[in-house]
Image (cartoon, rainbow, N blue to C red; front, side, top):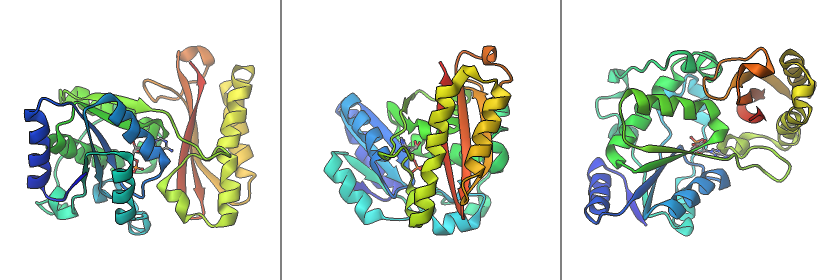
Length: 284
Ligand code: AMP
């Protein structure tokens, strides 16, 4: 595996792959890699001749400075895990490499319309603009045929699809299923910041979503929404930031089960100062 840090190194590595006529899959990550990330890497390895993975904690997508400061960073372990999994390229740029103009001079602006106005877009102002900026810059540098994203960040996939559509980017976006711990908790780099008691209680997030999926259309949307919010909020260390039941294509809240063919429940829960997200398909 080649480890690239500069723009020159990553460009040389991907140009070589292009010249050889080999296909390239790409997985953008913020590191602290776990089996959720690795499932994306394995899917890319299966689909493509070569696989590149970026590890970059992107400052422009953090609206909370403390979240950026405390975000787990385990670069050496990440490199070892990627090597062991069989990735071909690890791209690990510095902030200066990704933003040579300086963070205060970053000017790109994206309008994702209604897709970006709800849930994470409403709760984290500027977050999706930062995601759009960094993913577009990474796509420009890596020039993959396909890019892999986890459905854990459900709204993010819709944002990336919209960016690719708006900017006419010729990259196939491949959504991948959520990888969970055996008790159901969605794997997340932020899980390492939970203390044992928080970790024990955090399982109630996914367990409640599973119950909601079982209840499904036997309840009204409004009832199911209250059920999830009340059940999670009844767990002492958990506090629901939002739970929305949305159209899986448009991300807009639905009022009735007939409003969309694909309906997904999306939740964000604060566990102390750790913010966890999860989602579940309720109708498809
Ligand atoms: P992150 O490092 O959190 O920015 O995540 C990088 C990519 O890995 C994103 O596309 C995430 O959706 C994906 N990912 C993170 N956690 C999981 C998980 N538990 N299952 C599947 N994909 C995941």
